[in-house]
Image (cartoon, rainbow, N blue to C red; front, side):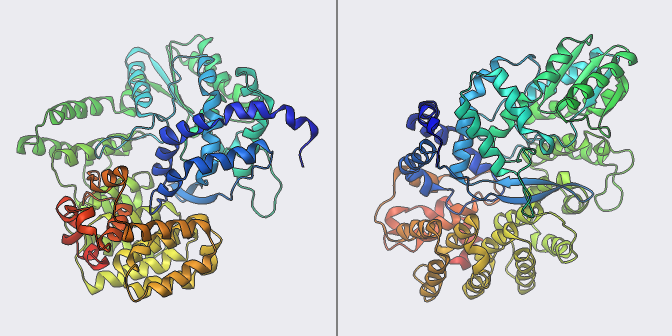
Length: 604
């Protein structure tokens, strides 16, 4: 029941949640954010896209009646270092749309009130980065991150001292009352809109063990919305730096770099920043706060190494992939690695510096672009020992010509409980789904072990296990996995969609009725939606132009030029009696469907 005053607030909510603005939000930003999430969707939420008008109308009804309820989010852990994990949050697509719309409604006004022109964060622009480029930042647009980096490199050349710092556990300690006050002071935002924003954020925070809401802790979501709000929390820091006696200042979210000419000035600005943050119950990260001399700053930012890599990049971008450039890049990599043992960087390696992972990723991308092979042993060492490099290493390992041997080593890590987080299992899932493997009983046994362990690691692990089983294991084992985990799957939005997402393995086979009974037992509208989507692909006599464009496009950033959700859709179409008419060039466009023994086993 709403209070009598709610009727006077509805117009403000109508303005923010108009159908045209919500449609624009979905098309330009939300679909992109969903694609970036670590946990993929079998049909990439195309059912939501096709029913967008109905989704928008439903959200409008619930918001304008005051009955909007945030769906249960999913949590997963991503290791930062030494077992310390960042807690990440997956939110329902409709909640992501609401959150993005609320954030976007105040973004431009917040941006206009920014005290500093050198606070470089901007939300993602919704454009995919082309190719296999490794982006070494976690949030915001790539362009804004590059501008930040360029400015900071200049500080190291201009100033005698450089302060580098960030905020300790920034997202975890954001207080929503402080956030509300800051936003209200900066933007002309109506109370009803601000109330809904804080309400949604509160329902997405982690509140375990029946504990009460704390009004503290911004959920870490793969979305621009929360980052736009968190960025505004640091405007007071920007103001302090702009009015202090410092030479240079740059900030990208909570990473701050300040150029000064004396040690006294450096210590004073650290003091003032920390006191400013304390007024909002935040603190500087003492372990990462450093005052560097000019020479130390050059080493810290790997300025010499970056300059060398930029030189290689310019040559490669002009199309030079000659043996000479391959030899030069490989030689530089080996020199910097200062190899110790099997892939371990030696004591003199610049890869071991604070910013070493950035040039490590940069040189990997150059080696890949010019056709050099990255040694499997080096990548496996990083997967085991460097959590910050794990995702990158797994992506490049998928290009290996000896993935059977590589996975045998990775599976030993899994069996020995080496990975303490959930993200590692998801990233290994991606490696298995997109790399090419030789069909061998030993490999299938190792995959079976991985699926068994992953399915016991919570919802995110089971999600990956379902799709890995759909590629590597017999239908009977896949159906048994679903049946054994029916209760867990039925309670989880993402798992329901994953279970239905393997429908193409069963369509037009003797096992379809058994599989269909499993889907019915889930009693999930989303499971029915995904299952019906694939069934339509296997039965319809024509494809929409947008779907045909999606299915014929090559995914060049993957080793076999195919994103696994697309494989599932192509498998459903291959079982259509009109398949040759619908996609006559399917196998010519995607030769991996036949050349990969496990794709072939799926039914191609």
